Length: 429
Image (tube, rainbow, N blue to C red; front, side, top):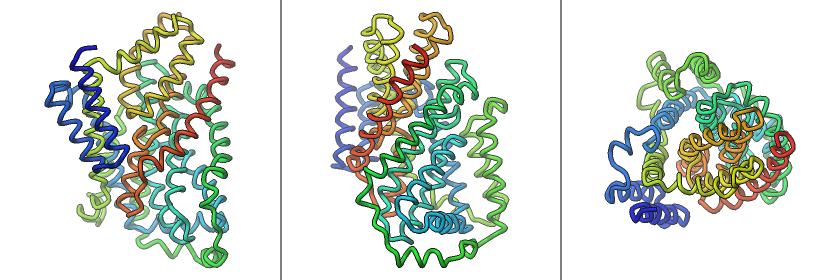
């Protein structure tokens, strides 16, 4: 690699160290790193702001913005209070039952929507129900975001990297259901069992608060029924458009912005109220992160690392699959899995063709998808949903540190990727 490539690696690692150690705010670290990348010409304005391969992914930014506005309007209706009471009553106030219920709901919703949209909708419910039961909210948020990344792996629309993989590999919605969903169900069951062990210290049952919850009527929490039905109608249309993306050909970001615009224009909610819930620091953090990773793409760092991993397998399909799975999990833990998959997918496409382009060679796509989706759980910056939840937690004055998330994420990632390894080998190889 060139001297500029090595310098860009040093800048990225320096910014990443600041994010991990929390010496300065993560937004400042990301923006500072992005600025230095531009200063040393590791990237430029064209590449950083307009390139599809190495620039800011505006589809992700505007998807988040649109859904944050929709959530801001929904919050005015009291629906989150309703869901919080409903969930607590169904769990009968038992902490572990509540976590299982929230994890399952999150995973299923993430498979139908995308995982970022899901955590935006579920996180407010989690804060309210934990407050009602005097439970620490952080373990529940971490469990939910991990569940969202696992559940999102099941479908084409569940996780942004899957959309990129489907586009490059010519894969359909049904392909993901057939090849990814069965194993995702197994992984979710394993994760539910792990929750009992990982978060056991958080399951403190308060009989008095549980009894109080059981006496509540969740229907009384609804503050504005007309606004609720308007909001749910728009949300349903947005969800349907997400699922019908292969038919309608509207990007999720376009759908989210249209939905947000219609909702604000058609209801009595003011613009100020609608945008009050937008996590601007999270959006800016993503922009900085995209520019930094894009600089690594521009200088050839990510491509070189990926090619070295592939060359080490000497063209053997089985070995290539395993290296791709584990390397994707490892690299997606360090850089966001969206730019990583965008970089790797052209390389995987060539490998699939070189391996004959048959159904067996398609295993490389599933290795990339599983590795990137599950590897995103390993650290606080591995997936978009992680960053969003950490931003929401900070906004609600319950900050989740980089290492607090990572100490759980690493364990879950290692176990889930280890379980996927024999699945890919036995089913395809």
